[in-house]
Image (cartoon, rainbow, N blue to C red; front, side, top):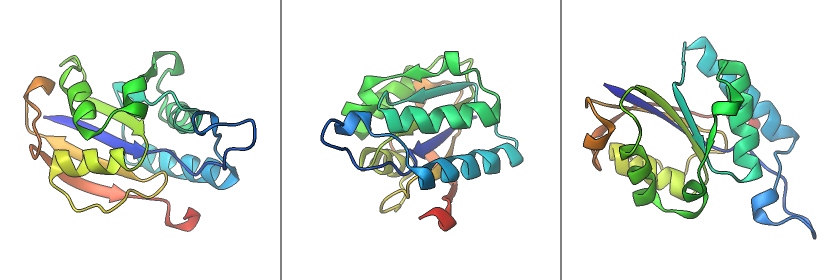
Length: 164
């Protein structure tokens, strides 16, 4: 059994004159929401063995908050440009390349790709993951290489309702 937590980054401020999309930082609401959701996962006993993130500032900010609260070493956080630039199929390829020693993986990304990926993996009907929304998907496989579209089961979807 493999488990993946798919996380959309928390709310970010708008890019300014000198700030492009890639460099947008979390706003105050986003910071609170990220802490809230990470603490929820901690209460549920979530312990990621591998954390992957888009290298965009808002995704990294969100991932680092989760790492702090879930006691995952930030220096082991893997930044993957494909998560920022690629589509759902590319995220599936990334998942299929994960070492099988990792049973629990957490992936931080952006909409619409992150929602499409969740639906591809678990054949769901999540219209659009809310900011800082987290989806837990379990896949009954021994190897990440065996993961295919529709092979996952959506266990739950949570988002910080008070911060939307």
